[in-house]
Image 1 (cartoon, rainbow, N blue to C red):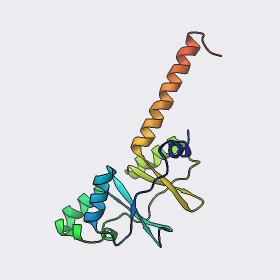
Image 2: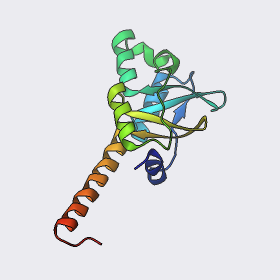
Image 3: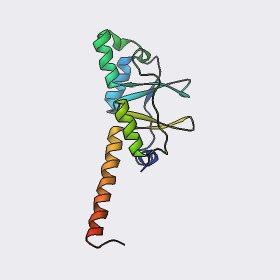
Image 4: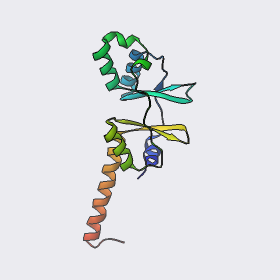
Length: 146
């Protein structure tokens, strides 16, 4: 299974803000949409400037106090975002997310933002894949294979 399979199922909706969006506004957007991060786009949405996660907000409050909520997300966002292509395998996505210790991974296709996957998406697909493998093995053992 590939990253493109996840996007095909979940869609490629992208929730984003700009570097000057306030942290409070970004947190409100994330809460309202029940998501754990926002992509931060600049140049009219043409380029990925960073990503703001719940973890970034918590660190910001712990470091700078609650007044950081009135500041721009550019002060807290993660820059130099790791991305993945749609042709990557789900195993590759899992490895990148595990090694980087993050839960959201933007998908870039030929330099264009194609969507975002989460660890929840990856786990869901991996479980479905494992279930299919078990069912196929059961059929094989029972002599019910084609």
